[in-house]
Length: 564
Ligand code: ATP
Ligand code: MG
Ligand code: MG
Ligand code: MG
Image (cartoon, rainbow, N blue to C red):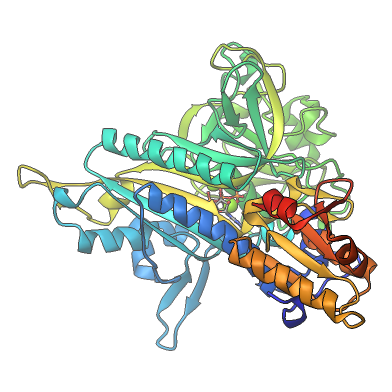
């Protein structure tokens, strides 16, 4: 690619709306442009990177035996009614009507569509096992889209779904996908960790999330300092060792994924679930308290006036809150050092008939909230206890540390729920109808681009891992107009490198060296080669690796060896 014929549009300004480094750099480098809240255009530069991620994901899915297909993003309501998710999915589901007034949703995920496909396509056990995947645009009406493509509303996901006759075979394929995910993130050059994740009550089988480690990550993960044990701190399993506190005995985990519960509460309270919210708590009939803590800002910016007309529920009085919570100081005041999940115990909660819902500030609590009506219906699945750094690891090896991660992948043993709800069966070896068991496997393709920048940047811009860079190398020409020999030599080198399989750009825009180098560093091309009159005279090219402090003058043979 000759950059004079490309659309490169960098900017020196630090965009005001961007809070985290990846968002800032993606805007400065001109990789994305915002169309509306949570909707982004991928510029030609951004798209090159996105396609790199997609390619690695596709290659590893193919290698793992998954078969690519493409499903519609618009999905009919009827399918979602079959699984009950038309209602249950909540506010993230974007519902639209066509001219005949029929309802559709823009797919946030594709379990319904793939199960519908399977019930029509799969007739015999001989067609199993099978794993289908697609790389496709999803839409989720996130309560607060933020951080650019990190939490967008429209985003690119790889989603895969597998079908098996028995649980052992699902287990086998789950392992295969787990390993494929490891290869994907390794090839992309990311520091990541696979962690046990919440399975909810959908069958009680395995689930893992893959997290790119970064301080800006929204998730807290707990890992052992002396074994491979790692878990999302949302997860009961990670949640600390038996006997931690007698007071937590009465507490339970809800089936509703933690994040979704918090989002539902935030929606109910009409407060943005963002860094200004330190915690959100839901107190249930069963004596369950859940709180979310984000960032280290205060909640003061949230004004009481933002609360909606309260309908069936009303503001809780301070006396009611205190009566419910006893003297638990973590609830109304600052939540203290445990800045991830907060589980607050109280004896009196179990006696509650109605629910209190609130955030960690006076004036943000409601009573009379009902599960099912106002919030997703919970189901008790396990005891939940708090986990903090220094707790013994649940596997008995060492103690737990807490770190932050960005969820870039999630694999899940779904079991038979979807197939059962949708009447998907195949004939088994005895000619009997058997319901297949399913796995699902997601990767946030577009989120990976942002996550990678969180891990790979310096003061001058992005420092892409090789596999994700828009180009491997760039040949920069100094003063091409002044000296045609320099332009010719650069052109020749550019063509040779591409012919040798090194994806190379030619910076023939005729910029001054300072501006040209600043752009190249900002967009993060790993190898920069400068062709100048002086170098030509000496028979050398000036070579610099993006992460290296110094450049070197190399002759062509040495240069080729270095790049090869
Ligand atoms: P999160 O916890 O970040 O909301 P999720 O658990 O809701 O993600 P999954 O349903 O597991 O997401 O979807 C699979 C993958 O899709 C996630 O691991 C993540 O990488 C990506 N993803 C989910 N929501 C978004 C989003 N709003 N923007 C970009 N990528 C997303
Ligand atoms: Mg989500
Ligand atoms: Mg999640
Ligand atoms: Mg997930």
